Every structure is written in structure tokens, then in C-alpha cells.
Image (cartoon, rainbow, N blue to C red; front, side, top):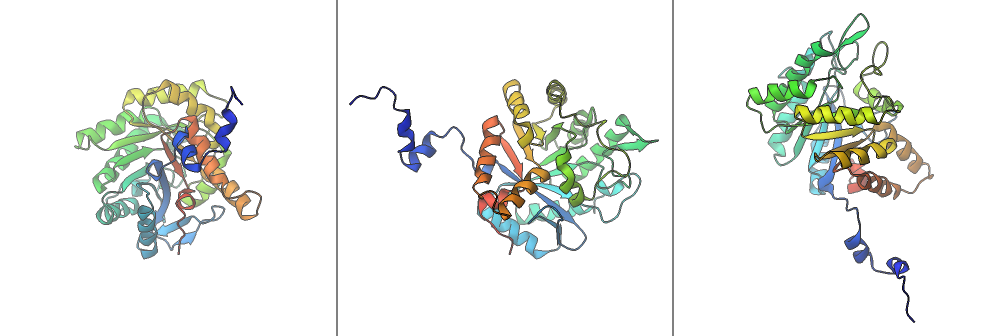
Length: 323
């Protein structure tokens, strides 16, 4: 019997063939794991299950990293958490800062691991804002030098990628200029080009202790309704010299990832943020979802067009547990 339409046969072929013809192939090489470090005691983060604020002297942190690397992880995104703050945020660029010390040690112990660092003022400033604030307003241009100083200190410590998350206009150009002038032409910039003013950041702000002391961040982050503005922000970062464009959050903004993929030749990264992680993780723990939903989540984000996925689910995907 002749069947002119044989599409249904795809359900009867072997898993190997299904993998061979899959439109999306997820590799650990495309994943980046976000990690929080500080000088306080190692502790699990409230509302961010199985994620920790790690003391950088904790041997278990490096055992955990080593295991992740053995299972294929090749990159991390580092967030520093302040145990003390000041009005300027100067702990963000000190040579003996917690991020700087952690990066130096990691690059010594795991030289092949790609280390990206978050660049912002929010966790280091007393007011918790991403930029210099005066009389309740964020001063864009006055912030740029500080962001460049943080980026330069991270690059000097060995960071392969600096990742400004502040959303100040002109920060990529300022950082690129400072890096190049200091001889760090090969240090990449992964800019938070499209960072939405989302309610999904709650667990992260607890983790980083970076909630603003007054007002909010809607004046410098993108409103969820805006797509054309997101494209414009990405275009500006591209023109200023970013190497990687980031979309944050990921799951609620798959359409934005797709638009950027169609319009730009630069690599696209997507941040599967703390709120997205927590709601799915908690649902899995309560039996609402099967843990296989993590693969479906990853597939959807890669299918939308991302090249790099930043996710707290990386240990789950790699099947690595913290001992």
C-alpha cells in the first residue's frame, strides 16, 4: 500500500534518528550558570530553591564547580553580593573585592572555564539603584565612569566577559573604550541589551540584596509592552560595540528573542531569570510538573533563536547535585 504522506512515521523511528533530525540541539557548551558569591556564610537563598550565596572560601563551592565542569559546563556568570555598601558603590571596583578575588581563583583553578561577570552598581550602593542617584533621579552620564571602572577591575582579575546589567545609555561604548585603552581588547561585552522591568526578578533581588531603597527601575528598564524599543536598545548596543546581545527575562519574552535573531548577526543570549526558575522548580517539587519540563523549557528558548542560555536549571540539566 502506498502512503503519499508519511509524516506520522516520525513517531515510530528510533530516538537516535529523532535526535539526528531535531531542529534544536541543546549542548552544555551553550549553557551558562549564574552563581552568587560573597564574604558571608554560605546559605541557601530564600525563594530560590537549591541556589546559594556562596562564601568564596567554601571548598564545597569549588567541588561543585568542578563537578559541573566534568559534566560539560564551560561558562558561568558571576554575581557579587555585598556584605557592606557605601554611597558610591566603590566596593564594586576594588581590586580586593569579592568578585575580583573569586575570578582570580577560578581562573587559576579552572583556566578553561569561561567567566562572565555582572557589572552594575545596585548591589554595592546603599540605595540599591543601578546608577548614580540624586534627588530621586538616576543620572545616566554620571554612572558611566563607574561602570567602566567595575568592568576594568573584572577584566584585570581575569574575567573573559563583562556583562553590564544597568541599562544606562552609552555604557557599552564607555566600557569598550576603557577596556581597549587598558589593553583588554579581547575581553568581550555581553550587554543586558533588552532588560525588561519585570516582576520576575523578586528572588534575584533577595539573592543579591539589591532591591532599590526608593522608587523602582522602570525609568531605565524597558516596559513589558515594548518590542520596537527593545529592538532599538539592541541596535544601539550593537553600534557601540557589544559582542553579545542579551534578552532578560527569557520565557515570557520568546517573541523578543525571535525578533533579535532575525534582525542581528550578533550572538543572542537569554537569561532564564529567578522568578521563572522558582515557579517551575517549586511546581516540580510539588508534583505539578514532571522534571522533564526543564528540557521543554530549554528547547523553547533555543527554538526562539538564542545562542546562549543563562539558567539556574543548569545543574538539573547536567544532573549534578550539591553534596
